[in-house]
Image 1 (cartoon, rainbow, N blue to C red):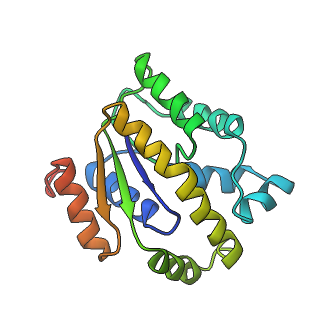
Image 2 (image 1 turned 90 degrees about the horizontal axis):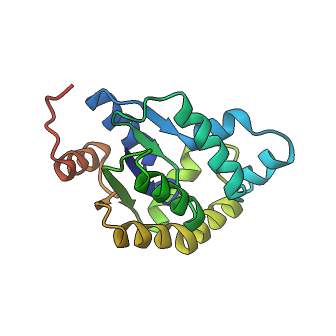
Amino acid sequence: MIIFMGVAGSGKSVQGKLLADEQGLPWLSTGEFLRMLISGQRRKDMQAGQLLEDKEVIALVRKIFGVVDTNNEFVLDGFPRTVAQADWLLSQVKHGQLHMTAVIHLTASKDDVRTRLLARGRVDDHEEAIAERFKEYEEGITQVLQQFRAADVKVFDINAAQTVDEVHADIVKAMNFTNDKA
């Protein structure tokens, strides 16, 4: 499993899909699944930038993993986002249920990300939700990245402020993939 992490708007989905397509891998986006499956007040909370409970997200990820052959490589976008979710994932790795190849951590400035999010025009991309996502990233994702590094998971920090092609080239180089592999 290759995990894509970074603040909302850093290009996780674009880069995850691009790598998955190029390498012929499944691309799993927890955000896409959540937007498809969550309704009512929980959906409104999500659109306001609030995180769902860890147990809800882990239950969804278990379902996703149930329909994908996790014995083969795949790209995972949007999970884990909290220390508890990372603990669960690392436990799955420790017990041989999953294999974690690497984490691609896309880095970008707040200004770059805010511009991207406002331009894409999703209903959950407004100033308050964007501020909430930055807070979540600073309080949660940075701890998750530290947790992965402490567990000797390969974490590649990639500058996401570049063009899509430049970011992709850096990911391919970090992962030692060749561009002609398909």
